[in-house]
Figure (cartoon, rainbow, N blue to C red):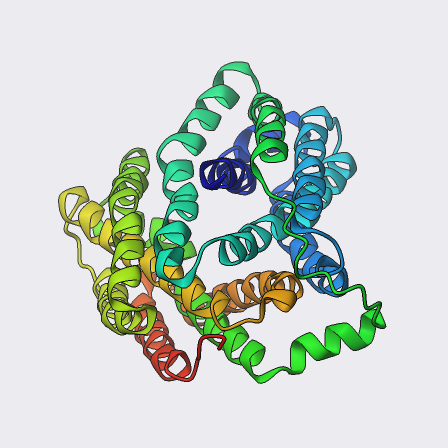
Length: 387
């Protein structure tokens, strides 16, 4: 069951990430400019954020298995529609559909893990699920780029849809019904949403995720540009940076899960967050050192970021009542997308240069991001497991 959830999550992540490296082919194939391409990229995130709010009142009214299968089929349909698109409006609509379904899948998978696995095994289970990001970075995206280069930009989407269908069949077989949270009470949807937003444990969870997303995404989107402009890494060497990071994450994520089960989520979080803040400062202040130093430093940043996400999600899901986990994780998905967008905007307001010039004030962004990251320690200390 856990491997099936991780495999579907990997497909969802590759689907989200693959559009960006396919940019040159999409611009040429659909005859669109950079501004329209930016809408293609952001359509997924905007749709995911909206879907999280709209779905929150409903996800706890149906069995988890039914909800997960429905969302998975929607993701596959949207992915196939991306490959079939022949114009900008069609691709924009297809990306919106894909984001609406795919943006909810990750949160629902974490809710399923929290429902199925007891607290003493939840850390390793969460770590295994979140290996999907490392596998997507190491194998999924490079393979997708290769397919797109050889067969056209549509090929990766068709390939993902073809891989996804049998995985949905596996989910039908492996997932239990998971209907124990359904209480039969039909609350007003707006009242249910407001209740989800107002519960103190939920607000603390949302605050923790928001801080981590802002701290990460004020830096991460600009790393490639900074490495090329300031650090002496060539564009051809950039894939090696992310493959190195993916490989290290592949090793560190399950180790983090094991540490959580052994020492407790809060203790592990308190150890990882300072390391993550330190790596943010190092990456954003790197001089011209070349690929030999840049790749391992970026890999350490990626690994610590992934580890703090595993730990924070194990902490948060354990603090939410089982009957409310679906609605909470739905809104949490929206919080993640909005906070990541705010982080990127914050970084963009501070940074200057690029486009052939050195990237200026990236170190300032790093200081702000590290400060936001350290602040998450206080919020995490206020999260309590469900009695």
